[in-house]
Length: 493
Image 1: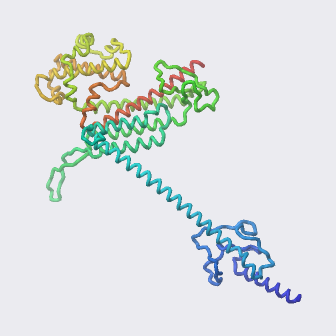
Image 2: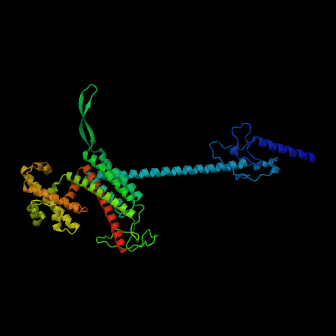
Image 3: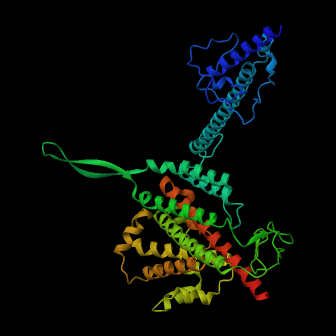
């Protein structure tokens, strides 16, 4: 019996050695290889029924330093030669778990891709609905009844740009980056509204030589001159203003409502010091600064951004004034002009404008002592009406029926004519008034021009430059508010 047992043990050991010799030579004794390490190209190893090896593209689980696999059961060395040991083979159990994990991973990845595709399709659908809404209002002239009683296309685009600015920047009363969603909304919808300018062209003649040497003159289209010059400039000013707001992401000052604690109250002495301004408006948040005031670096940054915003404001205002000057004067405004420019501006201003040999508009404004913006707007309306009244009288001898010919006729007017001199001085006074009060609202003539304008290109340029002018002015005012509070806190210290 002992001899038979010893021979059985030896045969079992020989079976183990043969199994080890068929495996990789780097395996140590007692190491059970997982199915991923079996050479699938080795045709000498028969395939066990119910067992399939992992393909080369499948995920491979590596082994740890321990002697047993995390996916297998403990191995009993005494049962290696018994037939019941097949139920404990680690490859069969590990393979099933690997396939289950791979199936779950594949399902999860497919689900993420489907979710991304759904989000992308939903965003496209939202943009398509927005385009339908915009162009429906454009075609209907904001008249949802469809009876043709809406405004013209030029006024519709002008109103759309104005309303978009109010939606995006209306609640933004602080020096801080624009909300990403609002920034994307501004860019997306402005691109949509400005796209109409891509199709406003003018035709110019161009000489073209044929292969036989014959010279032909052909017509070539190009963007209209005012759009070609002003629209890229306005886009650049727009990007610069957004960049100015983005530069205030990390700042030393903060904002808080009246009587409350600021959002950055973690710093020492962050409770707001109430600094009253002479022209404080209840809806504008008051900036707060540290108890010791702003650092020199922060002040330098604020000065630089204020100067940039001020230059942008001047550029946008110049473009807006140029576009308004090119618009036709409506007949309704001409009919409402006073018969006498003298009665429109008043006796004292008339005598000052006519009595002095060298007219100084700034001195006249100092003498008038305009106290409020409302008074300045009333003065601007009266001066502008007087200016066009005197121009009409200066050109009336030509007896031209159309008011649109006034600009051409002014070149033929006698420069020594009294009406011409008064019109020129009224224009210089109006210009000085707008320079002194840059926040001045639009005059009656400007409003009338915008309402009766039919030129889509001019309407787009005017509204775009107007909203950028307003944003630049607000940024300058917000920076001045910060400097005001900083000076007040510094004096208190």
